[in-house]
Image (cartoon, rainbow, N blue to C red; front, top):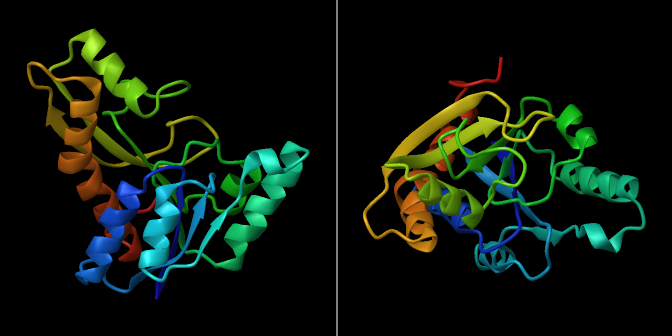
Amino acid sequence: MFNIVVMVSGGGTNLQAIIDKINKNELGDTRIAAVISSSRKAYALERAKQNNIPAEAVVKKDFDTAEAFDNALLSTIDKYSPDLIVLAGYLVIVPPVVIQKYKNKIINIHPSLIPAFCGDGFYGLKVHEAVLARGCKVTGATVHFVDEGTDTGPIILQKAVYVQPGDTPEILQKRVMEEAEWNILPEAVRLISQGKVNAG
């Protein structure tokens, strides 16, 4: 069995995309060992509950120091012995101790075609606002391995999505999710679980 831990901060639509593929037996022997959220209010926790997946919130502001949070997050992840950690809309910077321990075993979905519109400050709607402000005709999403930088790890998969006349950031965000994110994130999990992709 290939164990994944999915880390989330919000609604969990990318988590749902993975759950749906697992339920259809499209990801082989993959199972979600746990969902870890940066917020107790994240709807992703409810999605986990509905699918009988263990779920926990590790909230940064509950800890007096960054080190205490880092260690708590690492020990929570460790409990579930993941083969892969999937950042599915996780809006907290992953501590270096986690990245080092799980080197080449953490992937992230980013809502642009890296290297465009990525790095510090580019997340969520901000990405789509920037794409529209620049007048881009094509955007998309990228799944990449996580390293110590922001959106700098090796790219696994990308999928392009056309920008349409009249798009708002919200409309574009929804199209990028539906046409790109919800397809390439589960596919990256499948490829890694079958040994077809690695960070090396």
